[in-house]
Every structure is written in structure tokens, then in C-alpha cells.
Length: 607
Image (cartoon, rainbow, N blue to C red; front, side, top):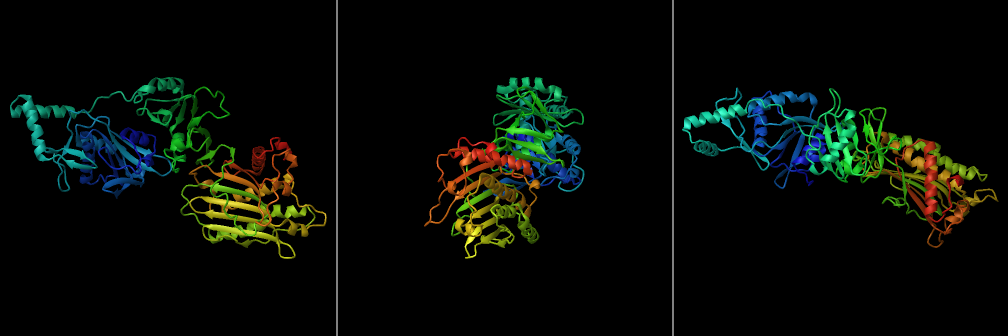
């Protein structure tokens, strides 16, 4: 179970992240209800007053409406956000009923929405700790529909995860102690107690709200200085106390009349930033589907972009911002981008590396093994993939598209440049699985003696993570050579390798995903990656001659090992992009790969 105290729960709700409460148990200071109070029913009004008064008598707490619970080992665990329709709740009515039915009205009680903008929406009642010398009462339950009695009272109290009435014997004891302590006759003492209770029940005077930096004494000065630098952006009064998330100190502020509020974010060693609440909600929503912890720990915090005029001074992210750079999270540097439809999406900043995914060796066990494999494999860690399937209609669309795809064209051009017309026009299912969650198609060019010469293949798996892959295979160099004019060579040039990798990547990133979903609609649960790989394989009895024999690598300059069997690079960035951009990224990735594998003089100009 997550560990959150009352202050952390308050902070999560105030920054509109109700899903952060899931898996918490109900307890002394937390209660959850799946649906709003039906306030046309007097019993529901009594229940509302009872719940609020119980928290007021018990040291404070949060009542959140719009989250279902499940019973687990005797505890009620907050399970799912059921969401509340805004038309079903009138916050002003709830506030008024609390003031009217709880005596005295608990000071500082807030009734607010917490809405992440992505479908998770709850109402919460925040009852702060009250004067310990004050007892909160409500009208005694009527037992049936009708007007509540005003001449009798009951005292609700919070015990563990339940709300109960203070027993009559305890009420008698409390009143007796109060009479005895007063030193007055019983009638006079009761009159004085009543007078004081009525005085307490009067509307509370206006009091100053939270102060700048309140709640974080050790960083209060830092937050105040940041506020002084940024208050001209329109930051109003603090809407709550400051709180910490990882290295960041944050505080919410009200906006101007009719304007959204702000979040002031201060990370040590960085310039402070004021982020409009709608953008802040989008930042949190971007990382909420990760298993890596709190959303901000996943996607990171706002940082000045490369286009920021003064990257060391304070800056503002306004409500109409189209993008915001983020860094410091477990996903690495990235950017939150808003589409023309107003939908925010996190995209990773480009990173080149060499860490293989656990899917890198998928679909490589065919026998006999090809002599050269040119591969692009894309991992799409989308959230909410459980319902994804490859429908018969989408499969038919893919089958019609493959003979005319970039991948088929690349295989055809490979032979055409050597004087032979060997089109990859026929695509057969297999040799891997074809199910509602898997795709496998292959186009093979055969030699006259039945040997496999060249192949192109596409594969896709739609399970917990969507993986798409495209291979171009030189199955047998001698079989391919037999199909070519007599003096045509079979060694690939760097230009050809680049064209093959480009075709494989475009097929894996553009053609295959369309068979299952529109990528633009999906949210990430981790950064997506593309793995580009060149591997010389071969059979056990005929060891691989190495990449340097199958590919002309001399243009890269001197290398350490031309008999190296494999080179690969991993690209972390959104796989979907324009063709010209993909070509530029591919060149950068190939140079990065070549240098890592010993070709230290490799340059983009050589490709």
C-alpha cells in the first residue's frame, strides 16, 4: 500500500490528482464514498453532517466522494475513481448544509472538486484540526423522514475507519464534568454552556489564509523569494500550504477573477517556475499510468527549454502554452506537447544508447538462420492496452498495404540496383503467430533450386506492451547471387544499409501500429524505444563471416573488428515522425552506433 499522511492526501487532491489516493485504507482521517449524498433525502443531509462533525471531533480528516472501496483483510481499501458528474453536486449547497447542521460550524472546512482533466473527478471535504476544547454536535437523527429536531443533539465521533455516535452515558459524563468544573448550580451551568455553544456557532470571522511558504519552514524563504520574482504573472493568494514532492517545493496560488490558479515550483539549483493549473494537471496526468511511483517522480519537473531567452531566470508557463520541457524524472528528459485538439501528450527527448529491450531477440529462431538481418524493432509502452486487438478489417488493410509498402520497395530496389527485377509482391502469413493479438507476414524471393534468397518480414505482438518489428533478410548470399547478372556483387553499401533500415523503421513505426490503434490517441506508461540492428548470423556449421564481409564498412574509416557479428543502437524518442526527420535521426543513430563499435572516425557526411 502507498504511504501517505493526511497532509500528503490534502496536497494530492489540491493539485487535482485523486488517483494518488488509490490503495490507501480508510481510517481515522480518511473516508471514501462512491457516490454523492442524495441531499433531497433528509437522512442524507444527516449523514453529511454526521460525517463532517465526526472528523471535526477526531482531529480532522478528508472525506472524498467519487472513489469506490474494496474489502481486503478487514480494511476498506480505496479501489477505483468512479468519478462524479459536476451537475450532480452543488458545492455551495454542501457548504451551506454543513454550516447549518453542524454546531458550531467547523472552522476552515473546504468543499472542493479534484479533477485531473482526464476523467478522474471527485469531490472532497477537508476538515482541518479544530480547537481541542470544542465539541461538535448535530441534530439527533429523526429515525424517519421529516424535519430534524432542534432541541436534541448527538455527537458523532470517528473511530478507526467508521463513524459512530457518542454513547449517551459519555454525553452525561461530559456534561456532569462541565457542570462540576463551573462551580455553578446545575441550571445556571447548563445555561452558560448553552450560551457559549451558541456563541461558537456564530459565523466565523474572516481569517487570513495560508501564508507564502507555510508548511515548509526550512524552505519558506526560498519559496517567498521565488514568489517575489514571479508574482507579476498573476499569482494571487496561496490556496493551500506548501508541500514537497521529491526535490521540488510547491505551493498552489489562486488566479485572478475568473482565471485559473497557479502552482509555484521551486527545485534547488534551478530557476523557479509558475505553472498555470491546467498545464500542471496535464503534467501530472502524463505520468499517472507509470508503475514508477508518483507522477512527478516519473515525468519530472518543468525546466527552461532551449528557446527560453533567459534560461537562468524565473519563467512562467501560461494556460495557453503549447509545450513545456520536463526533466528530473525516471523517464528522463522530455516535453509535454499539446495537440491542435487540446490533448496533452508527453514525448521523450531524443536519446541514443545501447540497452537492449527484452523483446530484442523476438522472432529470431527460424532455421536455417539468415546470413544478414537488418532489423527495426519498436516498443510502444502504451497505457490501457488490455482491450487492444487486431480486427479482421484491420488485418485485411495490412495485407493489402504490404505489397506496396516501403519495406517491399526496399527489397525490390536491392536487386534492381544489381540488374535483376525481383519484386517482393507476395506476402504470406507466418512463420510466426497470427491471432487477434499477433501479426506475422513474410515475403520471400526463392532461387530456382528452392533455396531462400531474400526475405522481408513484419511482426507485431499486442499484449502488455505493443511491439512492432520489420526485418529485411539476406537468407543465402549464394542463392541471391544466382538470381543476379553474372558479375553483380552482393556486398551492401552504407547507402543501401541506410535505406533498408529506414524502410524497416518506417514499416514498424507507421504501417504496423495502424493495424491496431491510432498512436496519436494513446498515452505512454514508459518511454518508447526503437532498436536498429545489423546482425550477421548464419548456421552452426557455417559460422558467420562477420558484418564487414556482407557490408562495405570502409567508408566509416578504420574499425577495430570487421568480423564483428552484430551492431545495434537504441533510440529513445517518439517513433512517429515525418520522413525527413526520420532520415536525420537515422543518420545520427548510425554514427553513434558506428563510433561505439570502434569506427571512431564515422561522420554523418559519410552516410
